[in-house]
Amino acid sequence: DIQMTQSPSFLSASVGDRVTITCQASQDISNSLNWYQQKPGKAPKALIFDVSNLETGVPSRFSGSGSGTHFTLTISSLQPEDFATYYCQQYDNLPRATFGPGTKVDLK
Amino acid sequence: EVHLAESGGGLVQPGGSLRLSCAASGFSFSKYAMTWVRQTLGQGLEWVSSIGGSGGTTYYADSVKGRFAISRDNPKNTLYLQMNSLRAEDTAVYFCAKDIGENTVTMFESWGQGTLVTVSS
Image (cartoon, rainbow over all chains, first blue to last red; front, side, top):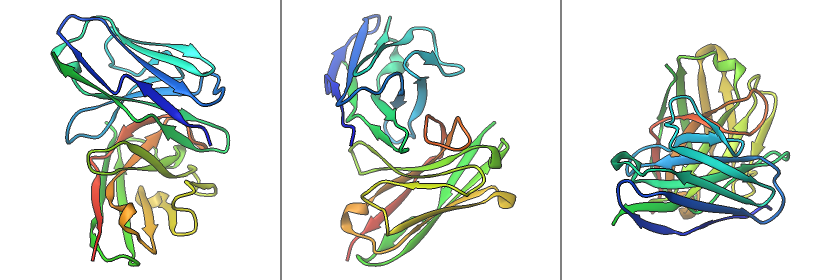
């Protein structure tokens, strides 16, 4: 099974900061990597699919990059509504999906 | 606008059964794969099961294979998850989600609000 890890687990930042979250897969997953945002008590929200494609309505301050086993989610200028937990998710051809453990972005 | 609404959660004893439903609206239901994802309280997300748009293909996580069954009623725009032989570790909020594709597992672009399943004696 493919395992996903994320770093850091927690991140304290201020409004306006550039934030980068890393996601690593235990084996090559090509570009089969998505990102979600979740706020407390709410369902996850899709942000980015296939590494770098923004979902409709997602602000351009969000971007994704990477390939193979190493991926990043970047928020270029953190806004108050961006404080949340972020999850990466891989999908394979079995098919199955695996989520990373999450990165909580908190106010410094 | 896509709308997904789960129901059927509740308290059940270990070994018991429960059926979750997810009512869908705002899109051509039969043209998209659907998925159940669960989240233990305060913890991360776990993919549980997916079903193709026609209902002819189903996929399960190893942790639920043989105990859970996913199905769909396309004329009723409803997704189901039959959960049998429930264990304490199945306690979680269960979300239904719409995939971006028709027949496999890729990205979950729309989610319901979730329904809580508690397995306890």
